[in-house]
Length: 186
Length: 158
Image (cartoon, rainbow over all chains, first blue to last red; front, side):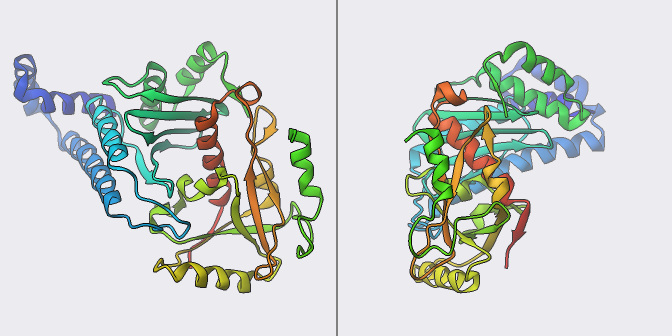
């Protein structure tokens, strides 16, 4: 089972308690889970759990925690980040890594050989993101957080996820070439 | 100050204490004091957030009284109950090679002090959206991510 189908399965399990249609699908498919499937689902949940744990650890940071006058992130920033992580998880997006800066910002990032995508939280209910994929750069400042990931960001994340299983970025490059007339090349 | 004038600052000694301007072939180090700034052996971009400060990001030049300057830095910071974690280092040419839309995003000056002759700073160049295609915050994320990439090439956590 590839990532995508594993994540769909995860989504159905997550929604199972509230969704009759999903229940029936689960009954039909659950007995077919292989050990590999179960392991993939478990890894997905564990990876997100680690991110939440790390996020909440930022509440404990003391003043000057980084030696350069660093401050802890405000509760609102932690909360905004948590809400965004929830959206990622519920959208079955491969888990990011999480980081904190001395300015009290929280960042999420995904990285592989040719791609880097970062989402940064420095204001309540807003985020900024940028990506660099095969030397094409694009970013947007201060996007209001709602229940949807912006289409463009979602697209690059889904493609990064696909790359993780296929190691093939040609569809993403095609997409970027066709849609990013205002993106830059280094 | 124009972009060209900013870059030209690298060609003139910053002050009388400076041993010399910073050469492309030099190695410079960024001292780290938090394990939150590295993960799985890599330095995270957030370790370099000071680069977007107006005052620049402090680094130490390996060729100029490095051990003395490093010890001095550790002593100063550890006074505040923060533990030294190590340092990441990079070649100056790689820092200067970071570009967007063919424009450099930072410059390196020999900001020597009496106590640290090998002190230097990396300053961020505030490019406009028209020049670089990114607005302020996305550009800052780009700069620190690229800096982290350069410093990640050689890491020494003691």
